[in-house]
Image (cartoon, rainbow, N blue to C red; front, side, top):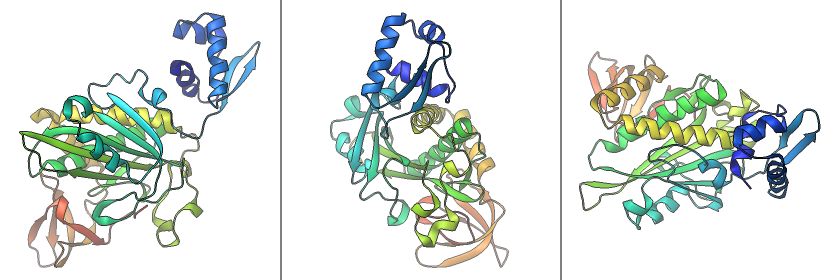
Length: 332
């Protein structure tokens, strides 16, 4: 199956495309195009054929297809290799296994799973999602080793995911500091960045991104149902394949921006502009003590700056601070 054909029909969002227009777009003569439509049917796509209107995509396979996700991405780094699996304990774990092959073979690898049996979130939380309802994605990259790198990458991934959701779904996506994405104050996505020390100047980092795409309210546990949602609750036309492609392209662009001071500053400003935690009174914990205050800023290392009840201003690092109350969203 030529993934260009299926992607073009996906992009039409259920509208018919004439055979002439589709063939001209892809450089395929009528017989070859018809053969590719037959192969799509064999792969699980449902395509209506009308002599006058042409082809209309009315059904897609449940699972993501690596060839579709990777086809013509045009990225410099992210998505050099794309691997799709039906089930994994965690996509981050599969990415870490690939890290053993080294940066030449594995830098830019993206792993996507339909279901995670032991998906994890920040601070040991579990990521729960029925199969075929989410984008469960881990990207492996080698970056300069620095203490603040995980926080910077968490911020960059949050910005990328928010911009991708806005681009594909036309939804105003905000960031609940430090690693959740919210739409109308309900969590729709989460970020988990994991790093391990290496022997050289650079070391491997796995950027895990989970996006709730098509879950129904009943799919979420009772205790968090009011605080989480899928994108389908706001936009019924979410196509996981197209959103995954937008996400990888956006992540690639945002990671490249971190390579220059001007680009990194732009990412910082965009994260602050989307941060729904700014201006709110919250309770945070550093693992030993809880503090209450108003969030007045994000520092350059993505730490939270609070004005405490006694008027003192204190910084709380992103990687060691937990929002204990007064925030928005929830786990999924």
